[in-house]
Image (cartoon, rainbow, N blue to C red; front, top):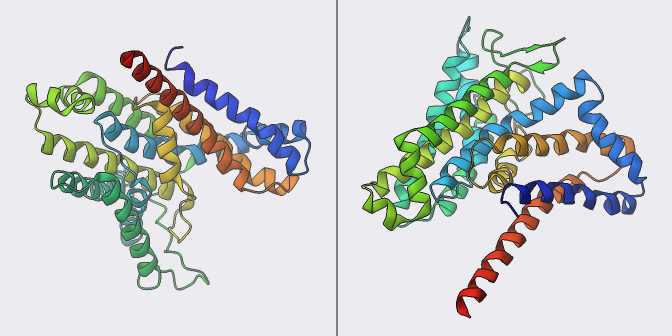
Length: 336
């Protein structure tokens, strides 16, 4: 079976898993599927909400998939997303903005989150595993946000902990009746540039070699320390862009619940994409579709929100089981 087919079949299987869960929740199966699809495709408002939910997943998913291609596991997407958004909200509230002003917070958010990734890459060369360091940076970013929201970052006019809203001159806005976010164009450009970087440049070739084998990469003249640092820096920067695009195009301010866990869902997106850049988009759209339908399933059918978490985890578990079984078969074949 071709590798590209396995994740698609896993997603279809996860939708089949929905049926008994809906029954256990006390709702009709047909009604559950209908409401899930109606949330994203029942109107232009639903389509816009679906795309808005998917945009951070596309960008953070790229931020996990790119280092994954280089044999590195970036679990710090959540902290990098928050870091990008924090820098973006500082710029968006400190200045007035104007035509093209959104580029400033985008670049600053990319750079600040890339710095976190670069530190994790540098620590990797000192013997610290990137999974540990990137997870720790998640905590640093979250508690830094919590601290700042209790101080100067908080909007004094709000009864809850959230920042001031970014100036109108920085906002990305929407089109098609104010439903579709302009952020989709930024995401499309970033996806195209990332594909070009990884598939058609010498840097991408080096990172791909690094993902195959350290020994092969060294024989081809690849500097392991530099390449790992660059890979995690680029991954962090892409995740940071996800936070800035969400900030400027949807929420306009940052609070304690700015992200519903995009950084962690992006790990599932990147795993299903198997380190390839383009497949990140459909998988991110699928998980965005699930997240978008979560509220409707809760409100209309009274189903628990954790149902969506099961649907997110199911395809990853299925894919992991298939590849694990294949690896086991190869081991048995070689052994005999």
